[in-house]
Image 1 (cartoon, rainbow, N blue to C red):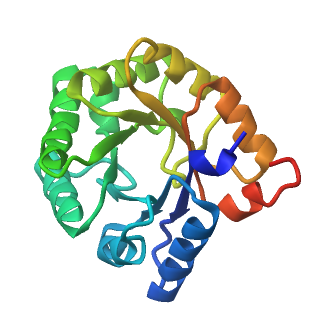
Image 2 (image 1 turned 180 degrees about the vertical axis):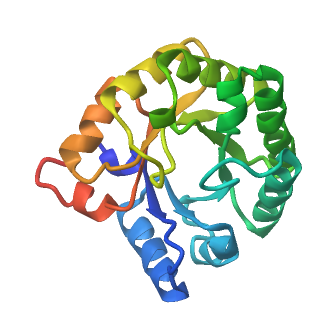
Length: 219
């Protein structure tokens, strides 16, 4: 298995420097990771560093709480795409989901999908699974599918819990039959962690431990 091709090499810390972003991009080029994932203010730099490499530039919107207004998420996503982002991981409105307000959640995701559509950027919807019941997770996946997102993603990595095999399998089942992928993120630090998520149905792995994962003798 070429596990590097699954990895979104991630650095979303608030204190990440330009030099650290450049190093992240250099590592992504070396290992041929699927993408780097950086904060919006670093998208232009990452896009410059990764031009013509085949490595996607991913960023976040409404991060990490998902509690900003939909139009703010859309503006954030649109600017990121203008700066060179090819993928946007948005956090859905978790409170609205738990209220049972499916229309509000659908509109929230659609706003970002529409904002990204002109530049052809793929949208991944972070559902923050640790805050949800299994039924709410399924609903989040269905609303993401209806809104035109390309992936559902387990976690921000800043919430109360990260990716679990249970959640990845549930989400993979929920989007089965569609063209959607599942991104497992949060707490994935080893080859074995990543492999277990892929075996459960993950098609992407979000991690800040990409080098450690591909450096394993098993990879």
